[in-house]
Length: 214
Image (cartoon, rainbow, N blue to C red; front, side):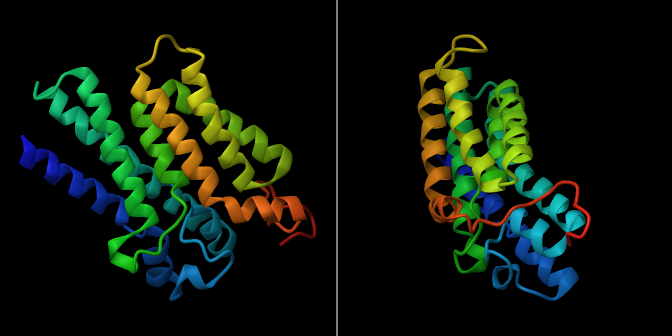
């Protein structure tokens, strides 16, 4: 069992390490996405630099990385190798390792993105209802502010608060604690964005381009 857990942990990290934005940009546009826009190897910068088609692809794959890694624990549960509480704990472990892989990808000199999309995929695997509400909050904040970074930070805080106040019923304490850890991690990786939002220099994005706006 120990070897299985070590193997799945390594697989989770490697899944997260898949540098979707970097490989897509190099394969279809002959560029390193990290040298353009914000320099971030994630979905938001891909949307900004390469357009909606590329951005949607990167968003989906990066989210799937987190979902697939966390779901590895469900496989163990389905074979009765672990109980449900252990399954949830392993979902958190494997999902977190995927996020670390996205932040520090072994395939690209440990320089990756901010992990928001991968975190979203992991959250969907952990708690679909809270993930849905959090996603709606993101869309609302983004629609009002046009800041993806602000929407991401607010959403990361909403998720653990939904669990803390038992909106969907009694939750496992480890899930609540981890929710706040993820919130801290997302806010920490967006610390430069916070400074730009305060100074008014943060880039805005629009779902529907305005007239005269590229």
